[in-house]
Figure 1 (tube, rainbow, N blue to C red):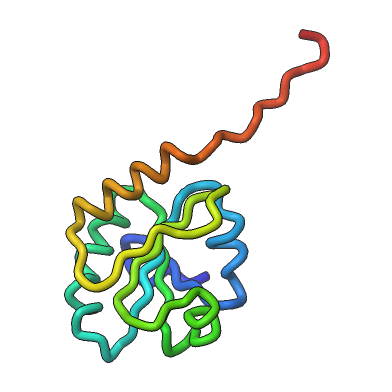
Figure 2: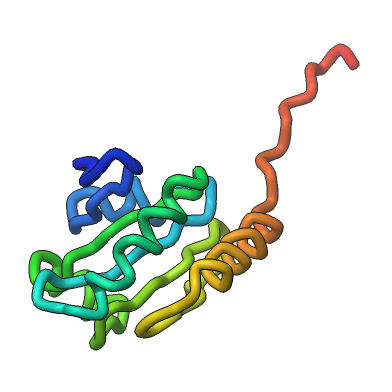
Amino acid sequence: MEALNAEGIVEVLAANWDQEVTQSLAPVLLFWTADWCSTCRLMRPVIEEIAATGHRVLLADVEKSRGLAEKNGVYAVPTMDIFTPGVREPVRYLGTVRKAELLAALVRASRQVVPAKAEVPDDL
Protein backbone atom coordinates (compact mmCIF):
# COMPACT_ATOMS: atom_id res chain seq x y z
CA MET A 1 0.00 0.00 0.00
CA GLU A 2 2.28 2.72 -1.27
CA ALA A 3 1.27 6.37 -1.55
CA LEU A 4 2.21 7.58 -5.01
CA ASN A 5 2.18 11.31 -4.36
CA ALA A 6 1.40 14.07 -1.88
CA GLU A 7 -2.32 13.71 -2.60
CA GLY A 8 -2.34 10.25 -1.00
CA ILE A 9 -3.29 8.21 -4.05
CA VAL A 10 -2.63 4.57 -3.17
CA GLU A 11 -1.58 1.93 -5.68
CA VAL A 12 -3.79 -1.15 -5.72
CA LEU A 13 -2.32 -4.58 -6.40
CA ALA A 14 -3.76 -8.07 -5.88
CA ALA A 15 -2.14 -8.13 -2.42
CA ASN A 16 -4.08 -5.11 -1.11
CA TRP A 17 -7.24 -5.28 -3.26
CA ASP A 18 -9.49 -6.54 -0.47
CA GLN A 19 -8.19 -4.05 2.07
CA GLU A 20 -8.38 -1.03 -0.23
CA VAL A 21 -11.45 -1.82 -2.35
CA THR A 22 -13.62 -4.68 -1.09
CA GLN A 23 -13.43 -3.79 2.61
CA SER A 24 -13.54 -0.03 2.21
CA LEU A 25 -16.21 1.67 4.30
CA ALA A 26 -16.26 4.69 1.99
CA PRO A 27 -16.65 4.99 -1.77
CA VAL A 28 -13.39 4.80 -3.69
CA LEU A 29 -12.43 6.07 -7.11
CA LEU A 30 -10.13 3.56 -8.79
CA PHE A 31 -8.11 4.99 -11.68
CA TRP A 32 -6.98 2.22 -14.06
CA THR A 33 -3.97 3.50 -15.99
CA ALA A 34 -0.77 2.59 -17.85
CA ASP A 35 2.53 4.42 -18.34
CA TRP A 36 2.20 4.30 -22.13
CA CYS A 37 -1.30 5.83 -22.13
CA SER A 38 -1.27 9.49 -23.19
CA THR A 39 -4.94 10.01 -22.25
CA CYS A 40 -4.14 8.61 -18.79
CA ARG A 41 -1.44 11.28 -18.43
CA LEU A 42 -4.04 13.91 -19.33
CA MET A 43 -6.43 12.56 -16.69
CA ARG A 44 -3.80 12.26 -13.94
CA PRO A 45 -4.06 15.95 -12.79
CA VAL A 46 -7.85 15.60 -12.60
CA ILE A 47 -7.51 12.45 -10.49
CA GLU A 48 -4.96 14.18 -8.23
CA GLU A 49 -7.30 17.17 -7.79
CA ILE A 50 -10.11 14.82 -6.76
CA ALA A 51 -7.83 13.12 -4.24
CA ALA A 52 -6.93 16.54 -2.84
CA THR A 53 -10.63 17.11 -2.02
CA GLY A 54 -10.49 14.27 0.51
CA HIS A 55 -12.14 11.50 -1.52
CA ARG A 56 -10.45 8.08 -1.45
CA VAL A 57 -8.59 7.63 -4.72
CA LEU A 58 -6.73 4.51 -5.77
CA LEU A 59 -4.60 3.74 -8.81
CA ALA A 60 -4.08 0.43 -10.60
CA ASP A 61 -1.52 0.04 -13.37
CA VAL A 62 -2.95 -2.44 -15.86
CA GLU A 63 0.56 -3.60 -16.77
CA LYS A 64 1.40 -4.49 -13.15
CA SER A 65 -2.06 -5.83 -12.37
CA ARG A 66 -3.21 -7.57 -15.54
CA GLY A 67 -5.11 -10.20 -13.57
CA LEU A 68 -7.04 -7.59 -11.60
CA ALA A 69 -7.79 -5.65 -14.77
CA GLU A 70 -9.11 -8.73 -16.54
CA LYS A 71 -11.12 -9.84 -13.49
CA ASN A 72 -12.74 -6.39 -13.38
CA GLY A 73 -13.39 -6.22 -17.12
CA VAL A 74 -10.92 -3.39 -17.75
CA TYR A 75 -9.84 -3.62 -21.38
CA ALA A 76 -9.18 0.05 -22.11
CA VAL A 77 -7.45 2.85 -20.24
CA PRO A 78 -8.07 5.21 -18.72
CA THR A 79 -10.96 3.63 -16.87
CA MET A 80 -12.33 5.12 -13.67
CA ASP A 81 -14.43 2.89 -11.43
CA ILE A 82 -16.32 4.17 -8.41
CA PHE A 83 -16.83 1.38 -5.90
CA THR A 84 -19.51 1.93 -3.26
CA PRO A 85 -19.70 -0.28 -0.16
CA GLY A 86 -22.67 -2.62 -0.42
CA VAL A 87 -23.09 -2.07 -4.17
CA ARG A 88 -22.04 -5.01 -6.31
CA GLU A 89 -21.01 -3.25 -9.54
CA PRO A 90 -18.94 -0.08 -9.75
CA VAL A 91 -19.97 2.96 -11.73
CA ARG A 92 -17.60 3.05 -14.72
CA TYR A 93 -16.23 5.91 -16.80
CA LEU A 94 -13.96 5.49 -19.84
CA GLY A 95 -11.60 7.96 -21.46
CA THR A 96 -11.51 11.60 -20.51
CA VAL A 97 -14.08 12.65 -17.94
CA ARG A 98 -14.67 16.07 -16.41
CA LYS A 99 -13.66 16.49 -12.79
CA ALA A 100 -17.15 17.78 -11.92
CA GLU A 101 -18.74 14.62 -13.28
CA LEU A 102 -16.47 12.34 -11.23
CA LEU A 103 -16.97 14.43 -8.09
CA ALA A 104 -20.75 14.33 -8.54
CA ALA A 105 -20.61 10.54 -8.89
CA LEU A 106 -18.54 10.27 -5.70
CA VAL A 107 -21.05 12.43 -3.83
CA ARG A 108 -23.92 10.23 -5.08
CA ALA A 109 -21.98 7.13 -4.01
CA SER A 110 -21.40 8.63 -0.56
CA ARG A 111 -25.16 9.08 -0.15
CA GLN A 112 -25.70 5.38 -0.91
CA VAL A 113 -23.44 4.20 1.91
CA VAL A 114 -25.41 2.90 4.85
CA PRO A 115 -23.69 3.84 8.12
CA ALA A 116 -22.77 1.02 10.45
CA LYS A 117 -25.25 0.44 13.24
CA ALA A 118 -24.22 2.08 16.48
CA GLU A 119 -24.16 -0.21 19.45
CA VAL A 120 -26.77 0.64 22.03
CA PRO A 121 -25.95 -0.19 25.64
CA ASP A 122 -28.24 -2.82 27.19
CA ASP A 123 -29.20 -0.55 30.08
CA LEU A 124 -31.03 1.96 27.87
